[in-house]
Image (cartoon, rainbow over the protein chains, first blue to last red):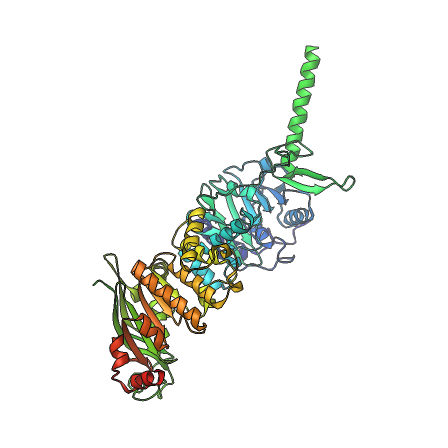
Length: 299
Length: 276
């Protein structure tokens, strides 16, 4: 595939603007910086916000990983990856988290802890957490400015009253650096603690809503909660009180996807992060090979 | 007695305004619309003082500017000119020179407002308890059990069945909604409460119960209140002192008994005569 496009598809001015907005976002942690989201050759809502950040920031020789719901092989991830490969000549792609310099993701942060030299871009559908409690953007801006998030807490209060627990499963409102509350894109609660003091820079881009915001490295990120009803992540405990394990690799410390086996009709659990799952399987295999070799040697 | 609020020359004009707005309107001209520029002079030169634990009545026909004055003090509207000083525990706040964040903070912590229409004071999409929680959360309380207890206390204090605290206020009767609104206004124990036509539109027995509640609260907590109403009965029952307003001007003020027994201004005389 060839480069009749400029490197990164966008023209230099467009990329410059995105980079400036990203810098501002890093300078004001959690603040939603408006930018002039360009038309991309795909519908808004398909990750154009994340894509524009990636295209503007990615450089020749860097290695990119694209994830959709933890998987490198789903349609969205494959198409975004091949689009970026087509328009950014000289970049490499990978599915391995630790080989990537640059990760664009939808709905998940990899299980493997990210490093200082890595950067993750999250695709965001709705950047403003206050949108569920205040329809007017003018008023939302005032609430953000004053750091008044009491209405979100009322939402949590109502949840506890009705269901005895906070029922927000993803897009959990999270306070960055003690002021702005962000919508951390549809990552599950499981991934929210990974925002806190993350060594890697986390950038969030909303193409349709034209906003960029950031969680800079080593910044506090506290999910909203009450003093006596703390935030908690998914526990994956089954009826017998056991932590469910991945059906494929046996891992009991990862975020699991639930789906129904089409042959047996039973519920099956599997690691959501495909690369993590593969890695667990390969280490397991190499351990068992080690064991066999030792047995052979001993025998 | 300790002063809690001092209002000086509060004015509110809707429209562009012109130099002759104040000269050509008022009770003497029988209008509050400036004939020169068409602006509405909702209130002009309203001044009064309020002391701790006192109830001040503001009386007048609709459009006389009584609600406007109170809405300005509660920061719901911006006054055109004027000054108001709120005395709070050795502190003085010049209300209209605060920025909007400070104003909202003060209103959340130290003021309570009860509107005629519960729609304005309550969020009908969240439960009665949630409405009270909202005010507590705004003032920085972050403990779920604490909030539940406080909401329960307030609702039982205002005689709302606590079993119904998790219901939506839209399922409540008008009187109940008004009680929830009062409970919400009292959530932070404010020293100053604004009541804007709180009994208007309720039936007589419910009116009486709400008025009883207001008097009890005043006695128990020594809350200062400004009661806006066009109902002489409410004024007679609650207010120690009263302002009478017409076309945005205060035309008479003084002790309530005096005003009702011996009204000086022709309008007040007509008003009292028509009601009795």
